[in-house]
Length: 70
Image (spheres, helix red, strand yellow):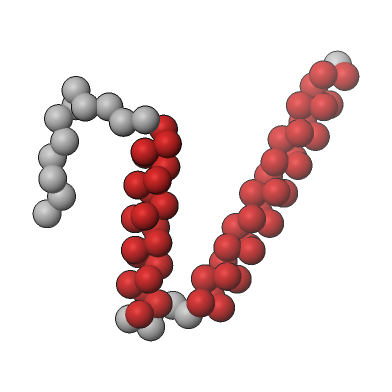
C-alpha cells in the first residue's frame, strides 16, 4: 500500500519529474516482462501520442494566430 505523505511536505519540480520517470519506467518494465505489451507496441504508441500532441499544438497555434489577426 502507498505511504501517506503529509500535505506539508513539498518536493521540487525536478524531484517530482524524476519520480514520475522512475514510476513510468517501472510500469513499462513490468508490462513488457509479463508480456502484456511488447517493446514494438510501446514504441508505436509513443509515436502515435507524439503525433497527436503535435497535431493538437499545431491547431492551437493556428487558432492563436487567427485570433491575433482579428
